[in-house]
Each structure stands twice: as C-alpha cells, then as structure tokens.
Amino acid sequence: MRNTSPTVLILASGRGERFTASGGQGSKLDALLHGKPVLQHTLDAVRASGLPFHLEAGPHAGMGDAIAAAVRATQDAAGWLVLPGDLPLIKSATLLAVAQMVAHHAVVVPVFEGQRGHPVAFAPLCRDALLTLKGNKGAALVVTMYGATELIVNDIGTVTDIDTVQDLDAATRLMTTRANIE
Image (cartoon, rainbow, N blue to C red; front, side):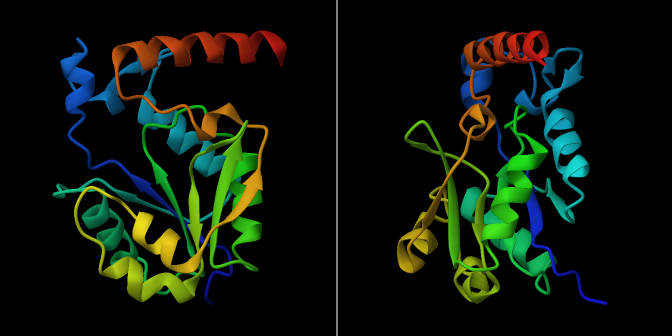
C-alpha cells in the first residue's frame, strides 16, 4: 500500500565548514544540544510527527545533489518535505501542518515572523525537476519554477539552523526558554 503522506527528506550530507571555522569541533550535526546531538533532535521531531522519512547522509557535492539523491531513493513518495538536519528546534506539529498543505499546493514554504524557513514541501508533480538538481542552491530553482505557497507558522525552529558555534549557543538559549515555558 502506498503511503499517502509526503516523506520528510532529512539532509545530513553537508560538510559543516562554517561550524568548524567558528571554533566548533567535528560535525555540527554531532554537536551536543541539551545533551543530545543536533541531528538527534531533528530526527526526534520527525519521528514524533509520524511522517515517513529518509535520512540522506551520503557525501554530495551540494545541497541540490543531496535533494536529488533523496528524491531518487523515495520516488514513489506522495511528495517531499526537505528538512536540513541542522534544524533541531523544529516542531513535529509544524512538519504535519506543512505536510497537509502539500496535498493542495505544488510548493509550500513555512514563514516565521516574515522569514522563510524549512521544511520546504514539494508535491509529486515537482519530482522530475527535483531529480535534476545539482550544486549548492538547493531547490531554489524548483520553488521559483512552481511558485511557493507560504504557510505562516509559530515555530522559530523553522528558521533556527546550526551553522556556527554561536548558532548552537542561541539554540541552547531558545531550548532552555521553551522548556521553562512548557
């Protein structure tokens, strides 16, 4: 039986050069955030959503290549949510909200306080265009080609990625604040 939910493509292929350049040790995805690796937080949110997922961790020349490889591995999916592995504060409810929207729109982009974030969702009609992606621009060309429907979200996790040690410190503060509020 074919899954009717889109598949979350968790991208974990980047080299993380900005992280080490900022003083970080090793991979940003392995950096500890509240005692757990950054990537584990992202995976936990995806698992909590109940959506099918594919972890793309192989070596790739750029984000476009990683997206194309992940789509190739999940070609029969009912759409895709492209989620970089370095978004540890993403909420499972946001993943579900974006997933529901892709049933009615070719491309869906979450927006938090005026800033576009991730995951960016693509309907099955975008498959061929996604399969041709290469380089570092990700899926920007496909977003432009099909136009994006913006979904306003109340989730700072959509725009909080970990590229530097300073980003990791900011995420730690946000996570502490969130824990104190909830």
